[in-house]
Length: 304
Ligand SMILES: [Zn+2]
Image 1: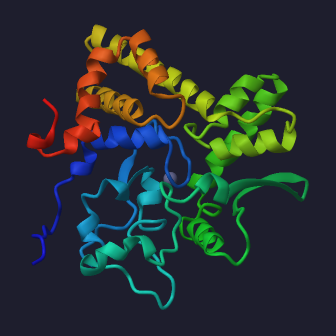
Image 2: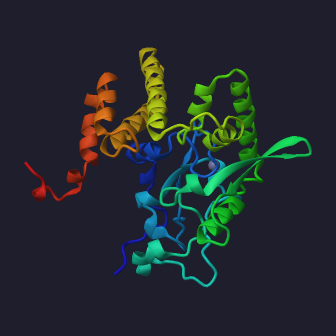
Image 3: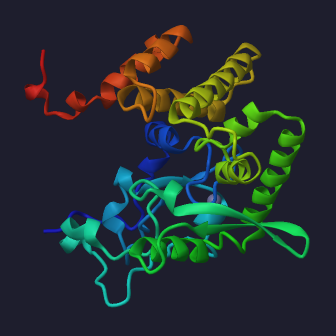
């Protein structure tokens, strides 16, 4: 027996708990092109939820990413999900074999994409050019996936993707001129838009400067989150908060709850100390409790 199918599933993936958990992985950065998502984003289904494809993954959290409208549009990723020639596409009946599917796209949550992709700075006709390139061994499955992702998502062709990357390079040069190395390092973080471009700049032009550590990346990001919350507080005081700003704030609380349960850096005690110091414990604690593994157990097996 198959589960009931809806022609158009209810969009549970737009809820603040889901989006907050995705923010804990990505911040406000498109999972594919690294564009700034401060002005809006979409929850993208990595394996498309189309009825002819992976409709049964419509509600699977591990299938979601935050992406820009461009990457989610039919000209770029859209409903594409290529698989290796001669391999079978996984369907509902064979879903247990999903991990072994011969997918051709890099999965930002499973694959070490920060190792697979790099921004190459090179000189051509006296100008500096930037292109995303695979940095994995030629002829491997990893390289095929990295290259196919670059090609199909038009990461070196779509001006909406390449222009922000060039602006980031110009910005990095200005920070270098001003000798603002701390800001350059801060922007070379995984939570920052175009982080790979700033990282490439540091490696190429300032090889003596240390690259950001995971702890630094998360600390800087938390400081940025706190600024967003301060801005929301100001909106509330001025009576200007609306449904959208309320939802964004709710997403931030869920994101902090996700950090508290499973921090990508620092550790639980340091995250907790940060939240205590910034007055988040009472707001985030109940959400954290709902994310704890014990909250997922059937009621009668929970400790009293
Ligand atoms: Zn994008």
